[in-house]
Amino acid sequence: QVQVVESGGGLVQAGESLTLSCTASGSILSINAMDWYRQAPGKVRELVAGIGSGDITKYADSVKGRFTISRDNAKNTVYLQMSSLKPEDAAVYYCYYNVIAKPWRYLDVWGQGTLVTVSS
Image (cartoon, rainbow, N blue to C red):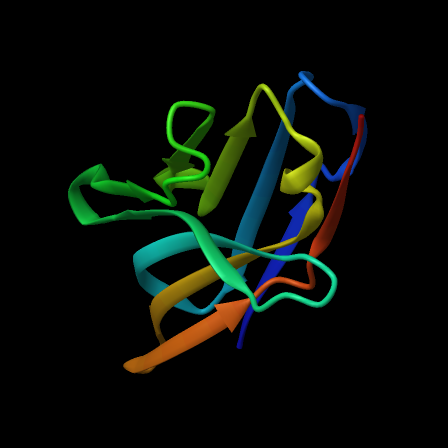
């Protein structure tokens, strides 16, 4: 079993910053990729940022230059630093892990979601 727990959501004003974190635990052999997604009310879930092997990163165009994804491999943790937040960034943010778990299974694991609210 693999579990992920997110933290860091909250209410901020436009222009402020917020950092989300997500930590995986359980019978993990390796982590292939860590992503952050978000879903606003009435909208589909969208990829915000991802980080893979070799720390190669990818970002949605809407957050490039404002959000930074990073990882701490020793802690199985992924971070999303969000700056210059806009009201349109408000959403429930989900972390996603693609892992290899014992004994040798590929798993897609989602966090429970954390709410980010941005007031104008």
